Image (cartoon, rainbow, N blue to C red; front, side, top):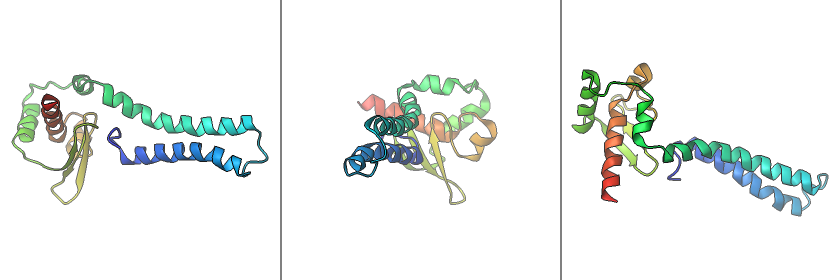
Length: 152
């Protein structure tokens, strides 16, 4: 599951691919006797294609360079507010719950007991939702990814 940044997306993909795999098994057992082999093959291809549609954004995300993902925000990284967010990320002014450098995603504890899910594309924290620019969670994640990459 390391490829997926979203657990929901993983389960949706898994569901459609599982359906695609079980159709021929059910057809062999006589469940689709009213359909011919072409229709059954069409159903398999349809469900497999839908499953793959859900995984394509994850593959694109995993192959896109960090700089390119962050470039889309058109934020001046040298602007004072952004520098402050980067410093808060470096100084540990947040509580990471789980970081997965391979899928480039993380979960952080929120101040009021909630949690935030961050990738290099977005975060569920109020700061990101309001500004649509990288937040301290995204900067922290980026630092962790860079450290992980330098160890390999």
